[in-house]
Image (cartoon, rainbow, N blue to C red; front, side, top):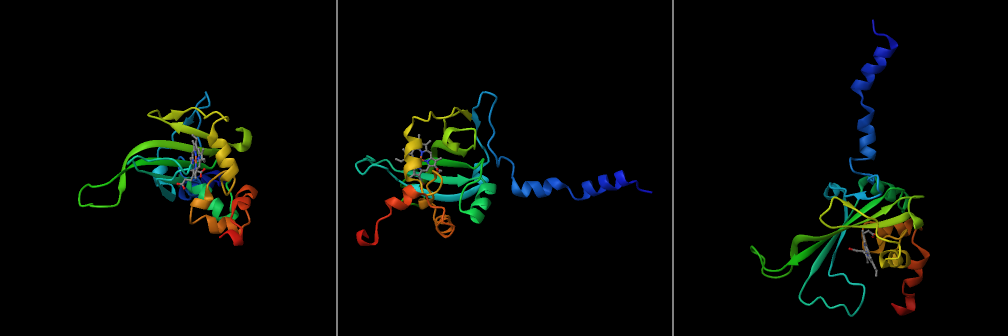
Length: 201
Ligand code: HEC
């Protein structure tokens, strides 16, 4: 005869709760910090949700690329992506990875246009409510698996706060997310102010 405790154990073995929990939070789905507050590189970010690729995106009209082209690929952790679909904004512990890759020209059968080459940089934007001033922080990774927070005086913070369409992130460049932010009315006042008025279009 099964005791109540044994039945509970049996049920737990048959229907592991972890399976349900994992669907919400895949491994590496939340930011991890070292004891000295460095962020660990979310190494499986290539299994996250892909948002967009920029090609030679530049923030100043005069920037010269001098024959050197770059792609950037943006990924976000799956749990936060799902939350965005429902709410139009980012929950606490959201993590983005921006992966920069050099553009290759001719190679294999390719005669024109560009394809992606080696990684040139990895930058992370992470939300930590109560952890960071302004709730968000940037981390730039070199060859290390951990990175120190970029100081808040860096222009990362001002550009993202002043021009990002949703909660300091560049949703205006993520085509699957912009319509959601529009329909949920979560576009930032700063972004809305920058939109051309109908007469300017
Ligand atoms: C002058 C404006 C500007 C500055 C300065 C800037 N960024 Fe961004 N950032 C952008 C734009 C535009 C995008 C969208 C890229 C795309 O669409 O591929 C972006 C996207 C990102 C993303 C993807 C997640 C998100 O927030 O949308 C990360 C991560 C990121 N930037 C990191 C940084 C870091 C780190 C710095 C500072 C070293 C920085 N950025 C400085 C304009 C800026």
